[in-house]
Image (cartoon, rainbow over all chains, first blue to last red; front, side, top):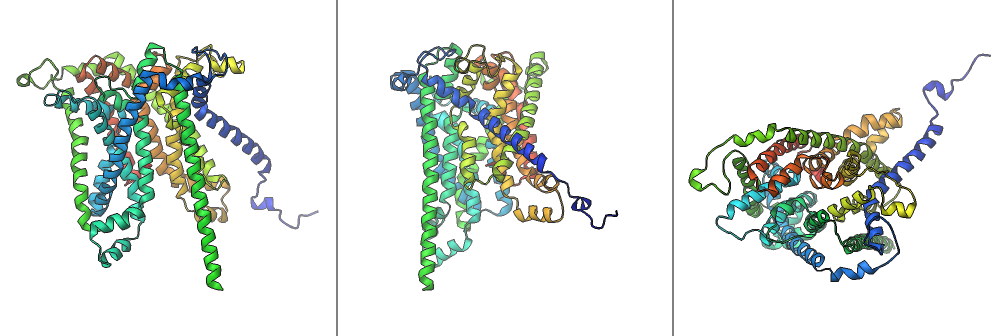
Amino acid sequence: MEKQYASIKDYGYRDFTKLNKIYSIIKKLLVILIVLGLYLSIIVIAIQSLNESRNLSSFTRLSFQWYLNIVREQELMNAIKNTFLVSSIATVLATFLGTFFAIGLYALSKKSRVLWMLLNNVPILNADIVTGFSLMLMFRLLMVVFPNIFGLFTLVMAHLFFTMPFVILSVMPKLKETDPNLMDAALDLGIKPYKALIKVVIPAIKAGIFSGMLLALTMSIDDFVISYFNTGSGFDNLSIWIYAVIGRRNLTPSVYAFSTLLTLFTMIGLLTYQFLQRQKKGKNNEKNSTSSVSSQS
Amino acid sequence: MNKEFRVLSRPYMVWLSVLVFFPILAMIFIGFSNLDSSVSIGEISLSFSHLNILTQSSTIIAFRNSLIFALATTFICFIFGYFIAYEIKLSKFKNKFVLLTLVILPMWSNLILRTESLANIMSENNILKSLLGFNIFGNIAGTWMAVLFGLVFTYMPFMILSVYTALEKIDFALEEAALDLGLTPLKKFWKVVFPLSLKGVVTGSIMVFLPTLAGFAIPKILSRGQIVFIGNIIDNKFIYTNYNHGALLAVVILIFILGSILLITKFDKEGETLL
């Protein structure tokens, strides 16, 4: 019997449903494995923080003593204090100055803006070790004039140097998104340019400033290499202190407890932020729908 | 924007020019001169005697290690990171931002502490073994596998983020058009999606490659000092205050970085995928 109709296979259709099933299983497995790999160290830190014994090779009993012990560990508390001191100074300055610098750069002609943004990327792309080492050499040369320069000052300077570009980089796209008429409207309504900047432009780029600030804080708190080269006279931040203590092989489990707490807080903070954002959105939608209904009636 | 605001960028121009160029120039100068703490200002002169550090076998081995590990890490991160980024893009989960946050959340805890805890569970008797009853890694402490594992999972979030940023910007209409014109999903991915995401891949690769190439803490902790990277040599020179040698080695790393920056500017002019 002759075939009368062409089947879809003749048009080049191939049935992949079976393969798809296998593929989706492999896919899920791979996702789980990779996420596990990303979280492995955090999980281990959490387990180590709950272990009663100081010994890291076996889990003896569940205990929260290391959490209570955090405040009693002098050196650890000192390192935490230093970390937060440097990071908060650097983040506040970087966010504040970076926002205004970004506005300034945005006002430049396109050609010079591209050029300066390229230079702005240098601290981001430059390897930490080169940034850290070269800044250290510069500060060392300055030591001829200021002998006690190493410490809080050099650390804050170094942190500002590599966090500010992140603020600028996250503010810039928001500036590009804002309506240029916004500024003109404000000026037409008779406000001075700088007042308009603060009343109109800054609120419009708020989200970019906020994410820039978060990035700056993240980079600054977790930094090891740049701080390692630029600290001095026993001014250790958390990373430097841990690195030094690992060498001596007597790290107190309270460090793990502190790290676990920090992870939990960031996770809770981010999730609540998300939740609030969504609620706000939901409310806005409701408002819009009710207002549209009322306008129709 | 109002041209009046151009003034606001002036201080930053000064700041950037000074802090980008001056330290690097100082570094190059110290690398190629006899300047150290014992030399007085009048005796400073150009000197190439420090160049011998570059031909020492320990330096060459360290460079080879750094390069091989950086390339391998970048490649593995590219494969798995791209996969995860693509899965996030495809996922039906509405709030993609939460997924991205979960991916980068580990980066918020201390890098050194994370590396140290990885080193702990890679040794023969470890805390996970006493809980699970078996060793998930075997006994790879101090080997190249330990270092590679640590590097890959430390830097993969950078790749995921960059690739996702690029993927997210792809217009869905293009993908629909490709399917309408008869491409299979696989071909659609290869001919449409992948080329458009290349920008993110390049940025992500550089964000993984550079810190791996120049890092020293992860290899030191995970290989227990067995595998020496170029960063470890610089670290040693720093500890023994041999700044001339350290500066020269850092200059070599700088050359790699300049190459990467050129590559990035070719693909991504204003650094949009850097975040």
